[in-house]
Length: 571
Image 1 (cartoon, helix red, strand yellow):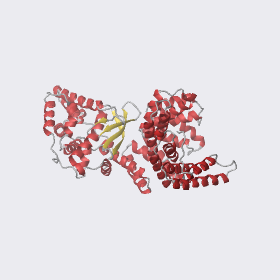
Image 2: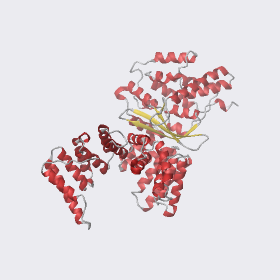
Image 3: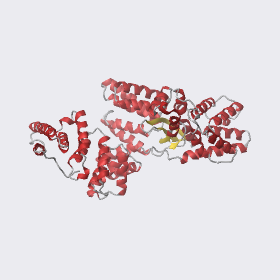
Image 4: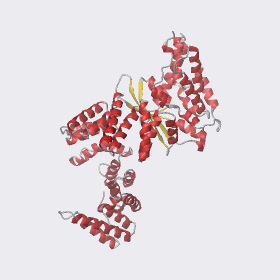
């Protein structure tokens, strides 16, 4: 009986279904046709020869040299085929042949060097085993040195399979996978959730596939698919990571038809054990349940809980957090709400940043738990240090509201900038713009202030945020904060799409002021009369004399009627 150590480990189901090679899909799409462009085959072949003969140790140069070949996609497809055949059932000679095929396709393949080292050691060839072990270590180190695994600093790999194999060599087990493609900038990434084999906490790890994708675009030119098209093709081909990513894209379209399709794709990926799909499917079921009644809603919530529990068993702190929210919402009865706090605590123990922020809010306000501002701030500080935009903004707002902002320092300003730069917090953008406009806690910079305010308005549909930004742009006494044309553009878009906003007297006032600031006083008067009428109608329905801004609205109407604009010290 041959030793099992001489055989490669069987790939997990998620890898077999969810980590197929990028370039192989391009071939399946019928796009790749090697030879369209001159390739640097000589450089790659020379490098491989030097590495094989021990004349070079430049293993880190292999990926770029390989991707410079115009036939790299074909070679990656050949590599995948050989990897698929090398699972089990081969004798030693057959396995040696498959490993040779892998290295012939791509000499930097991690799995090929790993298995070749094992085979060599098992056969008593220590020198050969040492060579492939050193090659494996050098190739693995090149990936380790290429980034930190974060969203902003991902590790670079040439394929999803390489990411899975590399993590395996780091004694990490993958529980979930998701592609992240951006058509605008032509980038493609792989997001994996994995735990260390001796641990129970899932980490989110990012890998950059953009160099491989861009190499394909170089070869295919205008025929190259967009990242979103590539992900859709991979989904149809059974890739669980692509199915999850495609489902999320469909879900965000917001239509009933796309929601049904999203659920179907997530169900397929969940069945493959993809923890990210299970987390997302639980959330989707919960959202759909809100629009259903009684028994159907209960069934959807039960289905959501089932998905969350499956994910929790895989180590998902995200699922713990979502379960905690369900309990806190009172869905399972007010008597069970304390269980939601305990679930949040468990998620915090696994370093879940969302759970830290929510539990901090509860402690800060004394909801479901005893009020403990100090404990809340410690949680917020952890979340802020972890880069959570909401936690950073919450902590900064606390500092600014305490002792006239005496505790606000450079670290807090840095967190506010991080939250704004994340693109996830329009409120952080607006607050940063306000501080820069005033010159509070930082040097005054009107140009940057206006830029952040405009970015805040552009990144949200929140009427109040848009109205606030537009007001600054059209009435600020500080002329270096003004941009009347942009302010009018913001208000035109808001008032034409949002019927509720269009009946708000304060927003109508801003809209009218925007027209006045652009010299269109006739339109400003017409809109301001509507603002006054709305406020007067509100006044008639109240016993306290009506809104206190009614006199101001009338004053603005008079100014616009006289061909005058409004000017105010803002923000």
